[in-house]
Image (cartoon, rainbow, N blue to C red; front, side, top):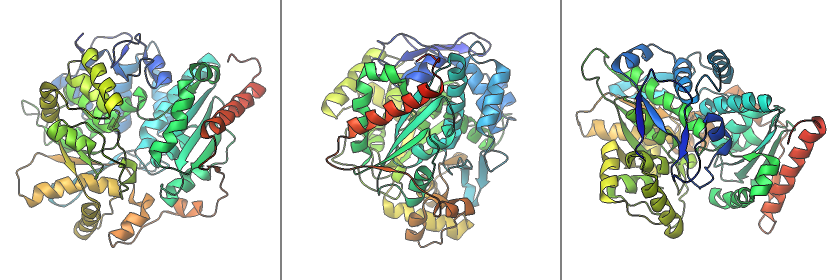
Length: 497
């Protein structure tokens, strides 16, 4: 059944369907608590509201939190969270951001616009979506009088942002697995210095793919998942994609020259990406009528670039370690959402493609789908050398420090300007602060600038349980999950499981 499109005035509950078409529909609450759909797919809205030119003009004056509120009203529905409650939850989510605008656009030389998504507590864009997601979770859990345990595997930023969003809360326990020695020192300290009793951190002797194995094993035991109300908070979770749509609307309104012309002028949004969550959010915003052109910018882990250029969605031999470590990912799982969207919400096609990929780890996109994908976005893959050169150039020209992930996006801007290609107004998304990546800043021949809060981490007590090669990682994870559940039951013996 093709994806429904409806004018904005339509109201009622928004339903979510699996990209693989077998699982039953759920409302926003169901999608929030599920992560993956039971058939292995990802949840997507059954219908996309179409935004008129007039609505876009009205939205153009909104702050970033104001845009998040409007999008959440559309995709959650006042029946589930009344408008006043929703406004309070979103205000609470952004209450600890350091910048009064929450998200800030820096306008630099030669039309370089950098949208700073990193003014939250952990200095990364994940604070935006995870802060809101955690507020929604707690809202529903308090209503249900229930507890959940969140299990997160992280390559760096997700873990610290997830911990920050739920630390000290009664209804949520969180367990984070980090790859020991493969995060930056600051990223690791942001996780291991949180000593609240609802937070547990494991340091795994392995990479991101290896630490996913015990997590997958635990989630495969459906009885155990149900008994302990387990859930994940990575970007398979629809709530994160929903909030990330606001980045694209805000970028557009900040960079569009005028909303008086007809048709509305396009803006190019350059998205540095790993698991493709921000990219999927941009594709949905496009489908709703936002006139953006997307550029997927990746490091040398280039599956996404190969897919856009040649339709080659296949794993490379191994993950390459790069300066843009949060993008050192082999499987950009949110591409499933994009394939579904571009195939006209054809769940049979999507299911067949993804099952083939899961079987063979290699997939050649059908010509029609590849043509739609390359029409929806451009792409670029950037070497480590280009990352550090871009950081150095941006500093020389603007006295502005980029993190290595932001540099992946900005390198595309420099590529365009050096070729003197006429280009659209453009906005590069900056997912993290350079302060989190002093090693990369030094490699670019620059001097790190480290805020006092980050320096203070060095002197804090840490807590981290090692998962060593040869240990039974799945058993260790199960034991800690049991422990957090018992802790909750001990405190609230009459609460439902």
